[in-house]
Length: 116
Length: 112
Image (cartoon, rainbow over the protein chains, first blue to last red):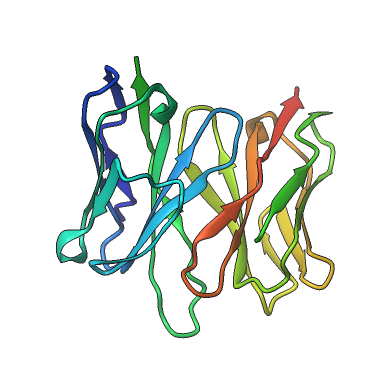
């Protein structure tokens, strides 16, 4: 059974550079979520896909952030012109939405971003 | 706007104690509630999920309860072990999208 995977696990970049993260959800999970977690805090919702459609974006997701889920499988999260405040753990989760289901979310190991 | 609070922020207990972690939320119109465990620098591991129609769920030494009317959930850990040391996060699921709103977590240390 393959869980949610994320790549890379760690990324160090200089301020102003662009970075892209990838998330591979559990197969057959049609919902995919991105969250961001800073030290000592709980994760905060960023965006959500149902299949390939991006259905909700948090106000935390500035115009420097873009997420895609082509073909409803893996997803990418890109941050353009990174700032030091973007340093955080970026977590991906997936779930299977079904009638009467519980929509339990399963999380990946996260990508730790450090912006110097 | 849904807000989730966890008390206490940190807890230290001797091995073998039974303990209760608390979670409260402001809007009772929830779809579900999940409890997670997070080890330092790692992702989240789902422990228990309670649907809005349920009152409790059990898995091994863990028992989670839900009282929607009072906006509260508790996670009970029986016979705590040093391996239980981690941060425990409570998250409330919305009805439309399933997105989770998290509390800040309770960091548990179980001393041998």
